Length: 549
Image: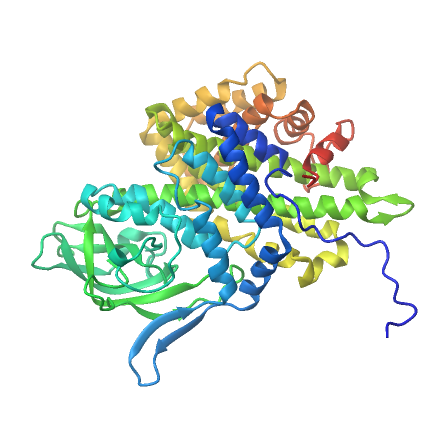
């Protein structure tokens, strides 16, 4: 019997049973902006269906269970034979199956595929981020495999399938497959040219035997992996080369893929990240010998965009939870959402979220376009966006958690899980310095990338004096690249924020663009979130972010 004093009041109801897609005005508008009108009805129905699934109590519970029951490694069977299998909770498989069936591994061959998939990935990331890794790797393997048309013809239909098949058996017997990636090694990290995994050619043309160790192998339960290994003698021809390593060989035997351990990570607990050993492991070369970095870079670029999308999804969910809580919670004689100081915090959070979403979908649209101009734009914009958006995720989630007070600090709120996840996308696929240096390489070696970027931001010139001033200042910085490495982060930040400002000025409601330009570009902003100029229309900014379908 409940105590007579235990009457629960002034608590927000759970944010559940709603459509995560249609409740996100910025995302819906981005999809409408970038898709062919002939595709909109179909895409809207598809994304709204995924949004309703994502917002359901059942699927949200699956996300909780998948994180509470992390994967377990089984290296040997009871007789001492190698197994090298990873066991996942049933909720993980249910989530991954939903992601595959929703087309989150299928973008490369359908009209508007990248925008549609990007919107779906952003929505699905709000449920459970761990299964985003195999979805992302599988999607991103396609451009790398296209370096070998024969391999692409064999594997691409399986990679882009909407069928999830978790069993380990030869890929030719499966309607759909998943891919992982193994690049980094313990001695090199992001410096993949320092890798020591060796590849020895076999009798059959294009086949090799690999020997070595991978410090981080993503999604070790996958059907295939793209990995880098050294070909040729250390002091001779060859060099880092890309290989496809199948988990199960065509005759049904297991390839040599020894999982040494699973990483005990800060967040992303439902997903398995492993250390693996190759010892006579069969592999098929992808692309030319010694050109492995160039071959796999298409996969890296696609997964970097997914890091942007994943962070945008985490920010959106954190902001939605904060605004929802403050809509219902009362303090000091009124609703929190109506208090000027809380409204300032919520509006500032909403600006970061919308800017991230708008930028991420613009990048996805560039993939769909595929023109030389858009490819050049992506060369600069993807690493800049990956640097900045993923960096903004953690402070946004921290501030959103604080909006819930003590309620946000307990596991049941879901906010601690978002917080543990928030630094991940900044680290994976090259941490901040790697992205900043990649931007510098594009600036110094590929002038067409800077030209494409300047044409893009120039589309908003004259619309806001603060944006015009920021573009002018950026051009001054770009005019002198002497000693630029030491200030690379500052430069890349400005590149990303100016691009966000240009997009918001062109496409967002005036109150959103005004607040963004005043704070991020005009300098009328403090050192923490919630320090926007009080003269702005902050109520409209917050209302736009409220998760109401």
